[in-house]
Image (cartoon, rainbow, N blue to C red; front, top):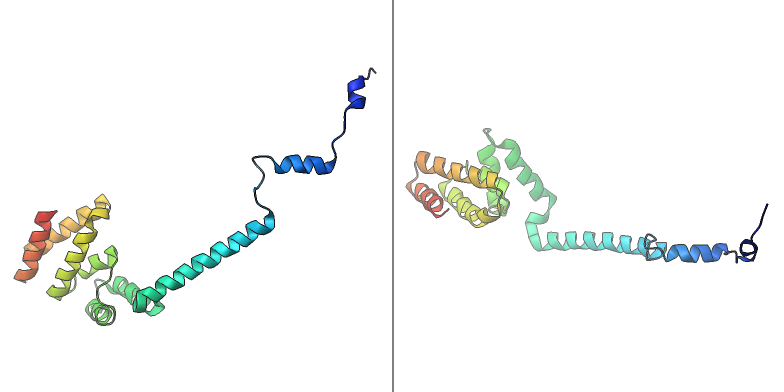
Length: 163
């Protein structure tokens, strides 16, 4: 067996040097594990803090009771209890701000509240998906043709004409 002088004279790298080179690798994490763990905890705490602050600014609408009342509107839609659930919700919290609940309120019997819901939905219209826009237009068209309240009919026709 022939040995070359270079192999014998070659400097062997210590394990410490191997680890140091590995740390410089672009695939190695940039921050030490302790700092990464600390940053994950602080990120989680910040998200929780923001959620609590949002609830604080939402007032009554940031509570679990509000969420239950909102879910009840969806659950009782199309039943005899729908009117009662919506009336209770509106008395306590006013009109909702989300598109899906507002669209359910279009089946409510109070024309003034339905008109208000339509006006709110008109402001949210531009950011909706094409499917939601089409559904909204169809609902407006049906309201304009079938409602017995002339003010609600006018509101529905005006909004339909402006879209």
